[in-house]
Image (cartoon, rainbow, N blue to C red; front, side, top):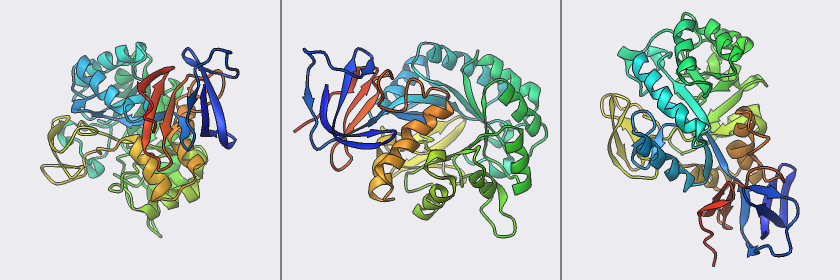
Amino acid sequence: MLSGANVVMPTGTVKDAQVVVDGTRITSAAPANAQVIDLNGHWLVPGFVDLHNHGGGGASFTSGTVDEVLKGIHTHRLHGTTTLVASTVTGDMDFLTRRAGLLSELAEQGEIAGIHFEGPFISPCRKGAHSEELLRDPEPSEVRKLIDAARGRAKMLTLATELPGGIDSVRLLAEHGVIAAVGHTDATYEQTVEAIDAGATVATHLFNAMPALGHRAPGPIAALLEDERVTVELINDGTHLHPAALELAFHHAGPERVAFVTDAMDAAGFGDGRYLLGPLEVEVSDGVARLVEGGSIAGSTLTLDRAFKRAVTIDRLPVEHAVAALSANPARLLGLDDRIGSLEPGKDADLVLLDADFELKGVMRQGEWVVEPQLP
């Protein structure tokens, strides 16, 4: 029995509350012999859910061995991410289908929640840290190859829907229960509206790798923010977004349509240095990852505990809004909100313990402490 904390529930924050864990689940009543842990002065929030993550701990989800991928997953668990979708980057199709096979096995084992394909179906105009020579149009037959290779574990695919085949591929993804995400795109406002009407429901790292918001050419940002069917990803690391852009997104999309993601690469939870992101070399300095050639931002070194603290201390978001963006919203988007995303009886015992300053002090996943409570 975790007792005395400020517990963030779907209906709001309950002070001096109790959360009871029995085995792997949260339950409504504590047995008489329950161990009691006093968490007075702390916060209990649901485990974080990351929709978009390329690696961490020095390990890459795109190219690492199974052991390396597991190391990256564990690194993020140490920072409160109890559910994670592993993201790839642009590569040739044979490599990506083999990669999908490896990652789908880890999904079947419950280590990850599924696979997110970011590229190769993206715009060369907005390629960011993707290899231009490996980009291709989103022909439905090619998209289908990745869906099939993932063996039912594909959760999301990012594509530039304005490219040839883009709209038909959005429809294909929707038919197969895979989230179609608009990103790395040079689409107009009108083209983005067409993609949403076809079934696109996510904006991949909104604002980044897409045309800026304009007063005569509003572009994809306006279309993605205004449509209630779309969840917008935000990378809240202080590098990818100005605080005013984050505030704009929350104001227009509302707290129920924002999902904080890391877009993390190998250096997350590891340190500065030289890394590879797919075939491209990346230099990480002072925690900021940029391509060695050209200097484009190349993912992030963010962990979700840092995104949470920044949201409530610098961005001044209500704690409940930060929890929605880090847990409830992505869980719902993945279709997993019957099991994760909130601290309700019957759900998995995935939770994060924070002190009064919102520093991480404990992580539990499925009833087991990943980070033992650090209490005074």
